[in-house]
Length: 203
Ligand SMILES: Nc1ncnc2c1ncn2[C@@H]1O[C@H](COP(=O)(O)OP(=O)(O)OP(=O)(O)O)[C@@H](O)[C@H]1O
Image (cartoon, rainbow, N blue to C red):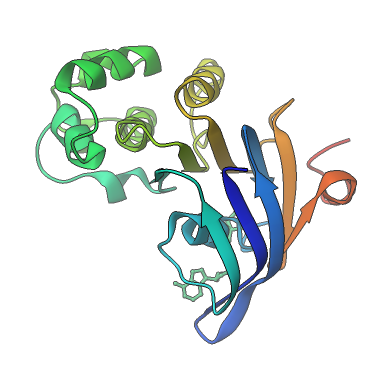
């Protein structure tokens, strides 16, 4: 398994915001759940940005995260230069250019990300996360504000480039393994599906 969580508890601002998360992730996965339930904190925990006060997090290989707010990825310079920084030396210019074409933003590679519209900034942030060539790709609401044809492209490129992908989303993706987060608790399998129905994510 690429990611293993065993009884993970996280406290932020004096509150327990992840409460006993236990799960294993491989392949394509989605974390679904209401606003403030803990999806982002769970991704941060897997990325190693947040440390649990109890439990164990195991990640095999390199992990990379795309933040929900794309602007957190950008420094001065062009989209290409930003992606190369985030790649940490793991991608060449030609490889980043190829990835940008696959994503559909090859034409903005030499522009400042700050000049771009929301959708292009979101895709540029996705490029930054992919450029690291991670074994485990963590995407926080990658589809938010994108037009439908980009949904399929983002999901396809993510699955093609990383063996394990975990997205946090309010849009349920068919065929991706569903996990449900509610009030800091992580549900898997049939329990997750039942919770998704209860909360109106699935029929
Ligand atoms: N830095 C922080 N300090 C204190 N509390 C935090 C911090 N970050 C998140 N929280 C709290 O942790 C809980 C989970 O937040 P999180 O952002 O993970 O939710 P989410 O499921 O991603 O929500 P959304 O769907 O709205 O993005 C919330 O109660 C939030 O207020």
